[in-house]
Image (cartoon, rainbow, N blue to C red; front, top):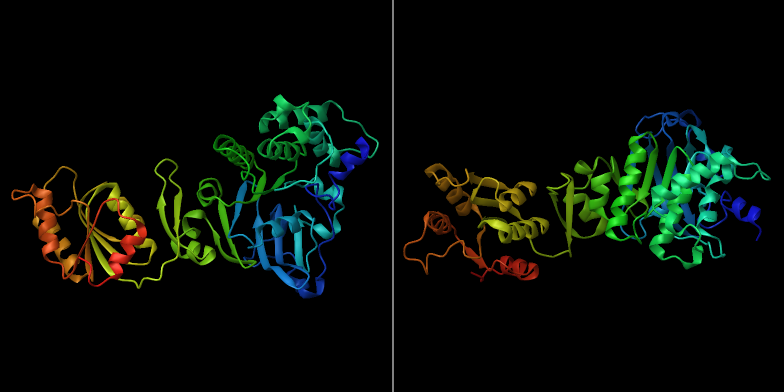
Length: 438
């Protein structure tokens, strides 16, 4: 393959990991022509850099994507999340034109993708694929230069503007130090960053990224997401398939939850990534808290359990109790907690779970009202779960105030389940489910 052929391949939609553009509109009759420029939410597709309407894709008899409608606006980062096989990669490939849609339409910057040439589409959206067919002995810089192909005539060479774009892209992606190395000699993570540099060199208003951090170490994963976030804040649009839910919640403006090739939920991460949506999409149980460092949702998933939901009051404080609260909440139990100091990590976890929490100011005594409220909750619960040494009265004839309060609350319970602070999640759920456990 000649150099000219190789760079032309970057804009050829038939090339694995290459550019974009193809006639994916094969179902004009399936969409009402009077609504051709309006998506399901009523937004005009001309206002969005990327838009799909009723997008459906099948491979043979297998329908992979069905009726997907979404938009990605300027200055917006949209994350596609969902289990393996949900259709995330297929949607991205339909947007870039590397797979044909069976029905529906795709718009790029207000124009139908079906009406754009590969070169025209490649000036509007750049792709960072999960895998690439680049197996020839190209230098890394040469691969990045392929991103300039949509801006060149067939026989044009790279000028100073192209060279500057390539230099900037390689610096942003952190690949300049191995610019002269063969693409076949770099690691999987390094190759992923080279593909990102190629997309940046393309200088498009929109980016499509398929698992952009999948092969990267923690440092480069965060650096990549920060870079995309900065580009979006500067006015570009980005859509990415992301497996890491915490990463999607931290960086994305909107999240689209996919399962079975369909959109199950869409919106801001703090409203979409709740326990119910995550559980339904991933067939798992989930606890959704808040990351104190980023103030974004933090999702912890657990294997699905078959325990019946119960009303439980929890007695305890600190990280061990927080873990118990999280696991019980994920399993679908209705919880209350108390008495605990304000700001205690267990109180935070219970609040994230939507539980009723009885708190008192830190380092203050427990007043009669708080004690009575906690006793009422324990009495109304199916069982009270005592975590670790929260109720040490049997071994402490003169307990401190917190132990005395815990003992008083436990005394009001119809059934008491004591679990060690380091209890295993399965053992915890088994204890709650076993009516004979105490």
